Amino acid sequence: MPGAEVKVEGAIATVRFDRDGNANALDHAMIDALERVARELSLNPDVSVIVLAGTPKIFAAGVDLKDARLWNPQGHAVSRHLSMNAGVRMSTAWRLLPQIVIAALEGPAIGGGAILALCADFRVMAEDAYLRFPEIRLGMTLGWGGLPLLTERVGAGRAKRILCCDETIGADEALTLGLADRKAAAGAALDEAQTWANEIAEIPPMSLRMTKSTIDAHARRNWAEGTEGDQFLLAKLLSEGGAG
Image 1 (tube, rainbow, N blue to C red):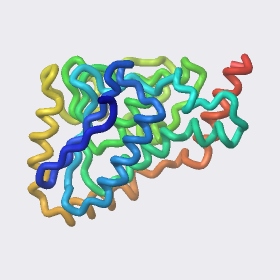
Image 2 (image 1 turned 90 degrees about the vertical axis):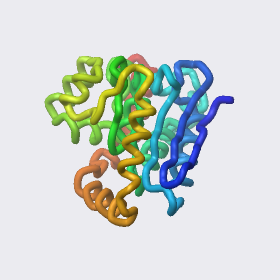
Image 3 (image 1 turned 90 degrees about the horizontal axis):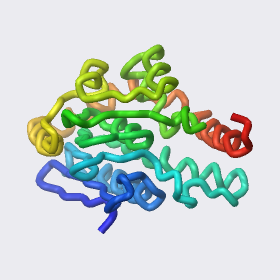
């Protein structure tokens, strides 16, 4: 059944999300499910590490451009703003988790799926996995907190290249750029992530949480938060109106 499945074993929670087809694109229902899971896990005092994975073949092929609930084309401006920013509420919930999060990537992680992966603290990429951010080519801006996360890791110049040139970033390049932390054989990303999670889970939980929160307070601030939701809606409206 499509949805987000959570399995907790000791101090490790494994979250797998699967739309049962549809390229595992993030529709409104899946976005809500992932936000709910993150908020529930944030309150679990027994979980120290969370492993996040899509399907065995694909992490997530971006946001579902055909889901009217996300785009709310008949709604007024405020309603559309709320609908189109469901993704940022989800990504914020994952970015602010007190536990260490490891994303296990198989196949493509595109657009919103790539942003979700960047919300994790670490990424394990299968050798055939890749990241791509096609938002600008689609007449949108990079929202969901993705712009600060990407720029933090690769720098301003490279972030512009990745976005404006719609670059595809394979596992080896992702390792070089700091967008990935470990590479695994095809089909083995989840196993590698879980092995790593077991190592991290041996650390005393309070020192683990305090270290993450202190680093994130400095390095993972969403400096685009005040404007990115408005820009996302404006870019969509301009695109729909033929203004480019």
